[in-house]
Image 1 (cartoon, rainbow, N blue to C red):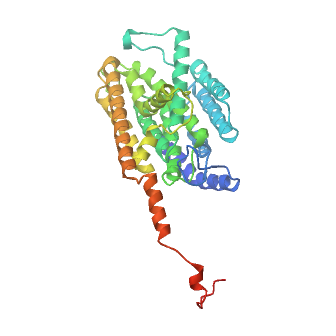
Image 2 (image 1 turned 180 degrees about the vertical axis):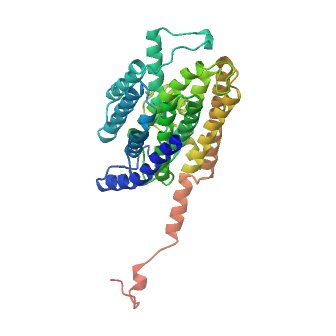
Length: 385
């Protein structure tokens, strides 16, 4: 009951607070203006992450004491740091180096102090346990990658919130049935805040989450995914909730953000540009070019994400050496097919458009049909003034 009430507490606080936040942001003109890479057509308030962080904070203050855990204060502190890094970047843009430095502080707090880390591959690729230094480095890199991968998909109404809702709900259920109640509580509380945000972020969006929200959500999900991977390994063989492909299960939970990040980085580098150079080469941009609407893209990509996760659930008794190539291969095949369909669609669309010379000729013909000679009206009763 406490988990349902914690979810409802966060959701209700979010529903009540978001209209106030939207009003304040509009009043002080803290908005995301259209133009450039932006695909919205009017000014929309940003920094919606403030809303669900407030909702999460109040709900945690009410219910967090019921399931204390040694590392919880460090985790909440790290989430707070990541929130303020995103808030600062939304208000006064940070350079990439300063942004990564701020993120590293939060990452170190989780990986080193709270000891939430990847301790090894447990047989995947023939690799067992990592030494402490390797574990720290690999875990920090993974958490940074997961955080920023999620940050990159926040470019469409409802998309980031949809993916986050799927991940938090599944993690909350898994942690609950394994007795890791503090992590389950955190998952459900974030789920309530994110769903409240989706009410106002669904197309047409009334508010965006901004880096304030996307970095906070990405970091929290990344931390919980790493915790899931390690606690899963400790389950006895034959347990219904155990994934023999623990690493693949963690990747599947964040498959779409990871795939999209890898895809755009490879495209940019192959074109001689920096991997962090902003553009419109994300998957959701391609789907929008095909004529799909914001809500259709969010539902489609959420469904694909959920399908990959369900596939891994069915393959949970197989090792990472089998499962990971399958889900990566499927993702790459779907991405390749998407590129082909999009290019074909755009070529057809361009072919149907009139050529520039045809447009000029048509305009000239229209102009030539209307000829007014002033002398023809000199003796008429029409007032030309």
